[in-house]
Image (cartoon, rainbow, N blue to C red; front, side, top):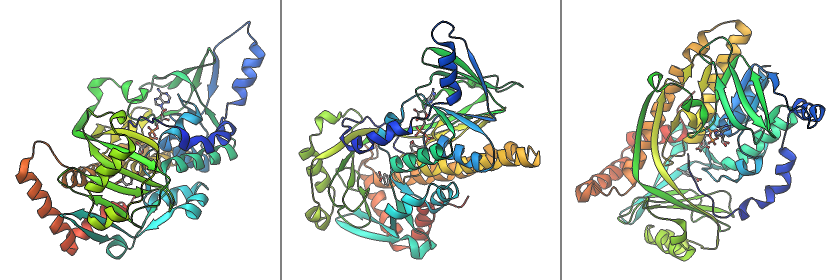
Amino acid sequence: MLHGFVAVSRDAHSPFAQRLYDIIIVCGRLRQARRDESLQDREEQVLRTKVAIIGAGPAGLLLGQLLHQYGIDNIILERQSPDYVLGRIRAGLLEEGTVTLLDQVGAGARAHAEGLLHEGIELAFAGRRHRIDMKSATGKTVMIYGQTEVTLDLMNARKAAGLTTVYEASDVQPHDFDGSHPRVTYGKDGVTHTLDCDFIAGCDGFHGVSRASVPASALQEFERVYPFGWLGILSETPPVSHELIYSNHARGFALCTMRSMKRSRHYVQCSLDDHVDQWPDDRFWDELKSRLDQEAADSLITGPSIEKSIAPLRSFVAEPMRFGKMFLCGDAAHIVPPTGAKGLNLAASDAHYLSSALREFYDEKSNAGIDAYSARALARVWKAVRFSWWMTSMLHKFPDNGSIGARIQLAELDYVTQSQAAMTSLAENYVGLPF
Ligand code: APR
Ligand code: PHB
């Protein structure tokens, strides 16, 4: 999860531009309604669907496709334009379970064709790199494939299925989810609309309106804000190594990852007060090199950044994930620091649990699944929260932990890379716990 990135360059996204406008799916009924009313009578329109989904990020889009597969109609309301949604650069590592879900909804073909399968990762510390062989420890791999690409594939699948997404919906507001008449109101082109529904799925990210609409007394929130951020750059350069390098260094954490064999994504731990303007490309590359082992530093190929952004790191969980007829899904309910790339994968497991629960409700007339949704999702969420916190704690420089903290980290890294049991534990969590 790379929540909160501020993109400073959109060059990277220009190839999408043509396709983006192609993807804008506006409800035919809305368009017709707008035409009918012309300008004289801009009346409120009332629509109806089974599940009103707020937010067209990976959580909302995947949920929408899964529901569609189960024959459950749904409409997505998204505040931003498709261009904006695809412009957000986030992590790019998929667990096998996430890929299976993409396959299930017919959106996995490009990931299989273009994604890179990784069987291990490298942990760098004290001037050396140590490999964790995830495949031999767990039998599983992870796939390198950008979240932007996942989102685009899901948008295209939604378009192909003829499903409705209202982009640039303003003032989206869920109502009466604790009563018998849940609905969502929103504005589009100056007209207010009401979407009547059986259920609302709040897939609108950390800053969304869904969780914010729940009375504070009904929510319990758990949060840790880390005292540093990640500065990330995307560049048209080959990756340093064929696998990811997570580096613990006295100057701070660094991560070398990739989007393809020609495009790299690199991060360095930075101060929360830093601004991207203070980080010209040369400074970034020098800093990254200084945090890598000699061999990696020597083989690093640098080039101009095509995106540069700073993200804060946070662990956050809101409990429960259900409030009457509204469910939270993805970043709307939880945030993890990106060390381990669990954000998108948790959004996918939530969408799986919620869609199965709703299928059970409609097909089997049973409330069991929807009653169990929050507990089932949270059980997996908390394990990923723990793992992401642990990876973050082991790999970053913590200003307040002093020299003893740094030595304890090295001892832990030494243990994790020597003990088969510890390596297996890391690998099991990294490739994703079952769901
Ligand atoms: N009304 C409608 N849409 C909204 C509103 C609102 N009030 N607030 C936010 N949204 C939209 C956002 O514009 C965004 O497109 O909800 C969507 C939420 O998407 P994400 O933030 O991507 O969250 P999610 O779908 O849960 O995806 C999980 O995985 O790697 C992580 O954080 C990363 O996005 C990622 C996440
Ligand atoms: C990324 O590809 O951006 C990425 C990969 C792994 C992480 C975090 C980010 O742990």
